[in-house]
Length: 266
Image (cartoon, rainbow, N blue to C red; front, side, top):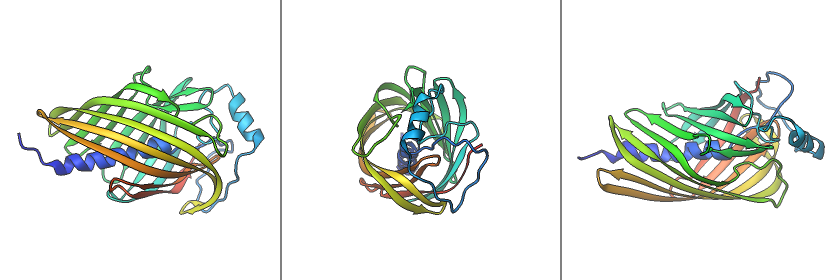
């Protein structure tokens, strides 16, 4: 069977960027009601705000992510697949939540997270977590089969280090025909400190987090495996009560920038 690789590589590239947008970018709690924001300035976390998040009875409370149903963040993505996307919280449970990215090009991705005392972990295997990406005629459905580490710690201080590794296995469907697919991802992150960052949504005092990410992606096209290794260096900025405000990724021909343009937190 001959298959056009263009949609395959488009979905791979979009999948990589979507996973980075989800796994490395999120937001933080707010307590002042619905607030569409553009041109605002936020402050860096203090000890009281971090302590409050850690002692909250909600296992998903984290100073850098507001896990609130209906919260949405609008981002602009530049790079090999320029686009815009809306990140939103679809549902919240006692020990986890489901989020979604909807891209302007028609790609949709959903993923589950688990929560442990403010530590947030993307794609929880024990809870049947999955990651789904779909585009015109092509879709990917992954189940997490192995997971170690944490995506977003309950508190972050300059110099902190953390790691997450996960294995995703499932299928890619092209024009109705399903093929086995897998993705082994490892990310090692270090908190560098608070910096002032300006994006279309405003100027923020944000914690800079530097991550090294390696993805080993395999697609089995009718007995002909297509293997791709992607190595990225990501610089991410997170603002308390806002979340991810900017990401700069370099490597593997996937240089890209993600910037927050607006957000709304109920």
